[in-house]
Image 1 (cartoon, rainbow, N blue to C red):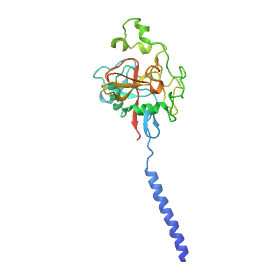
Image 2: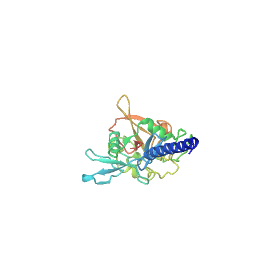
Image 3: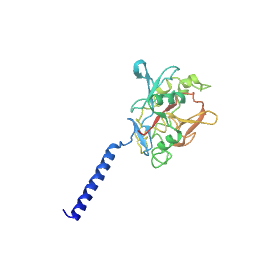
Image 4: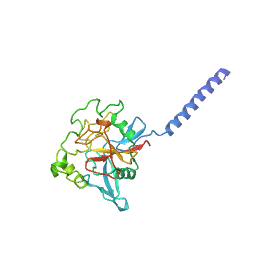
Length: 249
């Protein structure tokens, strides 16, 4: 073989070696993704597709569903789940929501994460677009407290945590049942249905929840910009739920 032939042969072997190394490197890299039931936001973090529900954690690792219409008393261990067609959990505090997400290997969404996911990849005031569309999400319903307790001074902890409130017709909807109440990431019900706790605290120590609920999506901001900063982290009532976030894996 002449000198030119040897050079060509060396070149071919060199190219093959580079390709082999590159392919091994490619095979060795695992694409980062989200846990089941979560959606990747801009390739940076994951968020639950649906509002959170709970299961109670029993001895020996067993679980059983927790009623979405019941507050969680002290000492009960619960874990977050997010399922299409389930009634999401109201009656939950920021402290409890944080613990439920952590028990599932996830975390309560940081406020900027929640807002970014709500507004979608082309940011808009509402998950579905720039303008409000009545009842595209579960919103603009009649408040349940006065339907049960009537007029008068009835907005107190006992009444606001009554299990009947979210079971009245025309109140809480099942997760994902408003099929057009989603953003382009594919995340449902970020406006309306239930307020959602986020991982944020004011300078005065108040917790923060976002998104409005089935009665109101306007008073404290429009749609994805709706934010309530008036309650302490242990506060809970029928109107407040949550969802979890997680890092890409």
